[in-house]
Image (cartoon, rainbow, N blue to C red; front, top):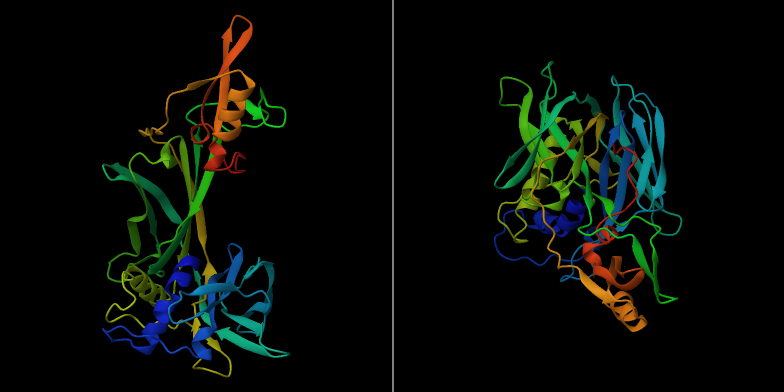
Length: 380
């Protein structure tokens, strides 16, 4: 959700200033809207708690929002009985921790950010109930002329969840169109046997859309075939094997409403001045200044995570030219392999003499141009 926050913050400045204005509006740049804290994350007792902090700045009235990670913060989780759970900075703007939380307590986030010489700004979220996600029943898929649709199925037998939120990470294996066992040794201007594998690779991605659903108007607390991803026909993600890991969160009403409003605004961003936008504030506040603009909502609970592997007969064809034979002479090797980006595949032999090298452009041979050749630890 981080990219969604970053891309919409400028829109939200306009929202706060003129929620129902249909005419273009140029926001007045003040200290309040030049330095806005964005808080993203979830207090998770079943997985790592990850909180991302950034500041969004506007350089000018014609500039877009530019996020900057907050690297000088003190971040901790607090419960309503005085317990504290500090989070550690693990990368710029990212604060993490692994804790087991008591589901009978309420939780909030506390943030301290350095501000000016010797000063600090303090922020805290509202205390929220601890929500335990039910299990994901299954991850299903359906192949149509529009591609492959991936669905999540879940239910709560206690009828206590109602509001659901999903995120996913996917990984897929793919192969080069042409395998190669040789490489060009540029310093010595010769072809040698290859020592690394550039034929089999993997690539990964993550969900960027806000995926939420509610069963509030249904007779059962059950979600059937909620679409979480769509893979276009012929996409190379399903050329060999595909895997998707889905994480499910149970939301409270306020958290669901926050994400629903954010989803509505991000889907309407064809214009910065769409009429009747939603006013998004979240549940995070600056202590001592209730009017300060802070963007984010922090919920708490136990998420549920599961993974599925999918192998579908899939008509994928990489658009590659035919193999080309490069003469086995120094000038040709330098030109094709050293300058034009060709990669040798195998030798052309005349008796015991190598007279040329079957080759093709690097994009059709070197899978590391589109992924990585280290097999993931979870891959079968």
